Image (cartoon, rainbow, N blue to C red; front, side, top):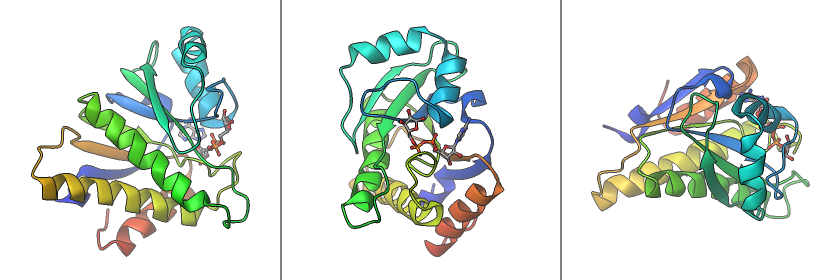
Amino acid sequence: MSAAEKLEVIEGDITTLDVDAIVNAANQQLAPGGGVCGAIHSSAGPELAVECAKLGGCATGEACITKGYELPAKWIIHAVGPVWGGGESGEDRLLYKCYDASLKLAEESKLSSIAFPAISTGIYGFPAPRAAHIAVAAVLDYVRAAQEMGTPAPLKRIIFCCFGVESVQVHQAALAEHGHSH
Ligand code: APR
C-alpha cells in the first residue's frame, strides 16, 4: 500500500467518526475550549475533562492520549498546536511535531485508524494552506519512514477530517503538491 493510499481527505465533523482515535486540537492545559476541542468535549461527555485534568498538561508540539468516552472513536489523541505569531518563531516545526507525535503515539497504542482536524488553523490563527502543507508533509514523512524501515505500520487509515470545503481544498492541494491526488 503506497504512502498516499493510506491518506484520506474528507469533509465533516470529527466527533462523528468511528475510528480508533480522533485528534483533538488541544491547549497546553488540556482544558475544554472552543472549536474542535469544544465539540469533542461536549460529545465525549464530562469524564473526558476529568481524565485530562489528571494528565498535568501537554507541551506545544506534543501529544497525549485519553479514552474516547461517549464518542464513537475509542481514543482521543490530544495534540497542542502552536499559536500563529507570524511564522518566525518556530511555528512550522511545532505544527509538524504535533502530527508526528500523534502518529507515533497512535503506533505505540497499536491503533489502525486516526483522524486529524486542521490543528492550529482556527483560534490559533495558523494560515490554513501553510498548515495543510505541513500536515501532509509530516504524515507522508512518517508513513514513508515506516515503509523504509520495513516495519508493518499498524496505521492503515490516516484521515484529514476537514471542517468546510476550503479546508478540504487546501489539504487536497497539499497532497497534489506531494504528487498524490485524492
Ligand atoms: N470537526 C472537525 N474540525 C473542526 C470541528 C469539528 N467538529 N470544529 C472545528 N474544526 C476545525 C476548525 O474549523 C479548524 O480548521 O478545527 C480546526 C482547528 O480549529 P480550533 O478548533 O480553533 O483549534 P486551534 O486553532 O488549534 O486552537 C486551539 O482553541 O478550542 C481551543 O482549547 C482549544 O485552546 C485551544 C485552541
